[in-house]
Amino acid sequence: MIERFKRRNSSLYWNQFALTAGMVLLTMLLLGVSFFALSYGTTTVEKRGEMRTRAELIAQMAATYLTAEEDQRVDQQEAFGKLAEVASRMSDVDFLICTSQGGVVLTTDESLGGRSVTLPQEIVDEILSAEALYEGRSDISGVYRDKKLVVGVPMYDVGGELLGIVVALMDEAAMLTMWRAFMGLFLVIFATILLIAFAVSSLTSMRQIKPITDMVRATRAYADGNFDVRIPELNRTDEVGELARSFNAMADSLAETERQRRDFIANVSHELKTPMTTIAGYTDGILDGTIPPEREKHYLRIISEEARRLSRLVRRMLDISQLQGKELKKQRFDICESMRLALLSMEQKINDRGLDVEAEIPEDSVMVIGERDLITQVIYNLLENAAKFASPNTALYLGLQTGEEQVVVSVRNHGATIPPEEVPLLFERFHKSDKSRSEDKDGYGLGLYIVNTILEQHKEKITVTSENGVTTFAFTLRRSSSPYTM
Image 1: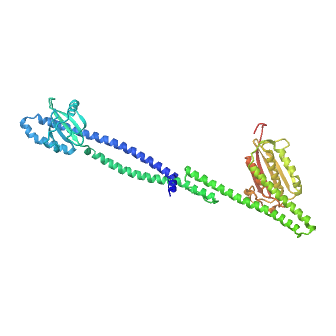
Image 2 (image 1 turned 120 degrees about the vertical axis):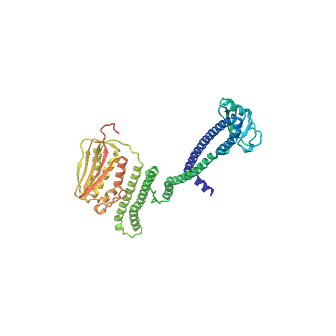
Image 3 (image 1 turned 30 degrees about the horizontal axis):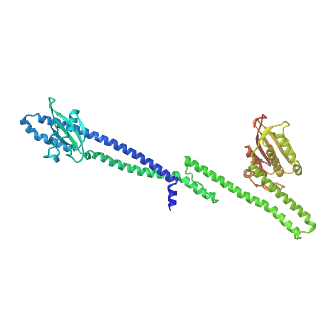
């Protein structure tokens, strides 16, 4: 269980999900801190401005009250007190009207009723030195349990004479009420965005990781020999979709390779089984006396022919194995000489079939780039295949067409037309055309496969056309116009 948990947490999905969620969380946290700092500063500035406005208003009213005549002061006292109380309630601000020495003579704070309160001397000095505004925090020499926000302004009469000091006090808890409301709203928004981000991140991660998970399951299926599993591409155009398409292409290639491997084993087994059975049967017949002595020479000749067939098959398979692992050593050589050499090697087989040879080979040398022995083998195999399937007493053509950059070697015979659906299969291993079109039953379907393998290693092309009984094989070679061209 622990190992499974570790594997799950170390998976690409969870790593991507954790990274995305972490980035969203960090971003929201930074935005939250910035928002809280900005909102707190803005709220504080607004409250201090409000306190200053109220304090200046109370200072003006108090100055009018203090400079009024004795009989007028009595009438204004009650109005002044009510106005100060209304201003205090509307703004959650308490006011202290003090003498120039800091003694409180009037307050809107009911908790200070009947108490003798004096402002700290440092606050008095700062208010008077500021001459316009003082802002700070203080518990007024222990009068309050917690420090309050303090805004103080001096109070002057119309002649500019100092009459006293007006101090506005506000509890910071009250000041932060609006800020807390903002903070609560932000937390709700933050939680909503975080949940949405987590959901989107989860869906995105799952969508990105699913093809990779499918590939893991597919590779396990391939390891078990099942090459039918494919990755749904889902019409995606991003890198993951391209990866899925490439993976499916690889799977198709693996499936085709596996099919060819099985066909190769089946074909080899079949090709080996027939001559081995013949050899073993006739040998046992000679040994146990089933075959009469006068017939032994006949059956020994059959055993010899079958042994040679096995030898040719093994040699062809060795040739293929060597070709597939061989590194080409290209050089300049005369393709005309190779064509003549291959034609001379086929002379006996051509005569046995009663074929006429039509050769269009230039008398002058035509230099090409490639491995001479392998290209000669290509020409020989094509001639051998053409002679095998040509109708008796027809013409066998071998020609060379030259161009500025390449040459084309063509081999043509007259015989049965190859069906169009069979043309793409001619170069596969152990593929055999309909044997009814050939009197030679000893083919193994490897000659054209060797031809195609050699030309692919040279990065050259071969084409096949078969119409109205005329079949033509043609392949290209890169021409060498200089002795130093490679």
